[in-house]
Length: 198
Image (cartoon, rainbow, N blue to C red; front, side, top):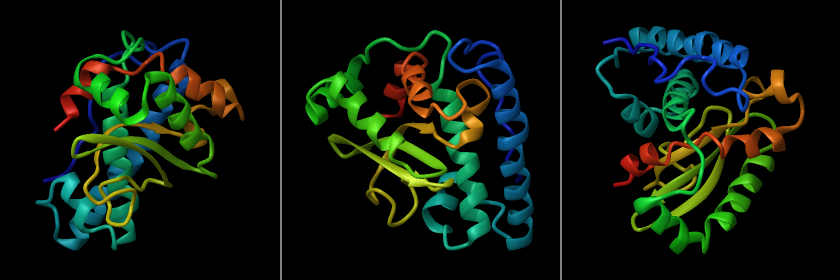
C-alpha cells in the first residue's frame, strides 16, 4: 500500500501573512511530495509496503532511504495538521496543564522551544513531545524525528514540530529564522495538539 500526499485542511493562502502562499505550495506540492515519492519507491524495493509510517520511523531507521523519506513524510504530515489559520493564542485543555507543569508557563515553553529551533544548526526540526505525564523539547537534524531510536527520548509522543529547513521560510523571511519561529506561534492549532496527547 503506497502512502499518499495528505490534503491540507486549509487553502495554500490561508496561513498568510505568517506563511506565504508560494512557500506553502512549494513546500507541500514539491518538497513533501518528493519525500513521498522516494518513500514509496523505497518501500517497493524493500518489500515493507505494509508498514505504518510510525512503524517505519520507530523500527526501520537504519535504512537511510526509509529514515530520510519516511521521516520527511511523517514530519510534514504532522506539521500541516498542527497549523491552522484560526490557530495561535494560548494553549488550553490538557496541553496547557502539561505545559504549565513541565515548563512553568507558556512563555517559558516558548522561550525553550524557540531556543531549540534557533540552535538547530542547518536543517532540521524542533519538537514538543509528551513522555508519560510530562513534556520535553528537543530538536532533530534533517528529517529525523522523536519516534526514531536514540533521538530525544525513546518513549516520546510528538505533539508538535516546527520545520526549520530553509525551504520552510526562506522566501518570506530569508535568513531571519527567528521571525519565522515567532510567526509560527500564531498558527498552532492547540485543539489538534490536545488530540495527540496520550
